[in-house]
Image (cartoon, rainbow, N blue to C red):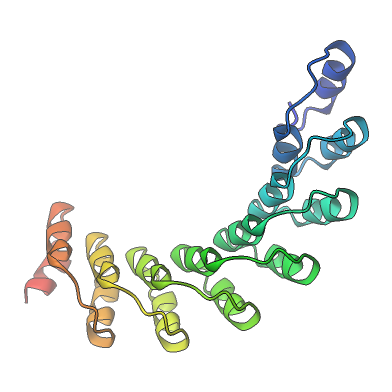
Length: 211
């Protein structure tokens, strides 16, 4: 009921039943942006809430909810909040957490932003945070076909990639990425590149790799 914003149902359950709610109630309501429900839970249940309320709200881009939880609740959040917001491309949320919270993020933030093709997020994290990324950033961006992200990481970061970048790009049929990696990176590929391209029918990639 909380996760779906059914306040009248919550009020009835609160009056007629004794089970109460779990710590997921506020988390689900916050994640889905149901502020009246969150306010009601805040007023009627004294404790038992967890950091996942702000974490989940951040992941879903619910900035006004994140701000409300910050102002009215004491649980705060974890690094998952910024990591998840970055992965989902919610730049306004990431900026707010950076300015108003101290938890920060991990390398997962840039890695996952790169995987999803959120170049503006990658650029912002690079300019404003110190966590950086891992080789997974370019590897996963290549596999997903995000050539602009791959090029940016190559020009602005030092982590580089592994052979999984070219293997992954080949397996998904991203010939332009395969060609770029071949021309600009030295990691190369493994036999998996041709095997995977053949397995899923990417003949244009298979033909290029064979040549």
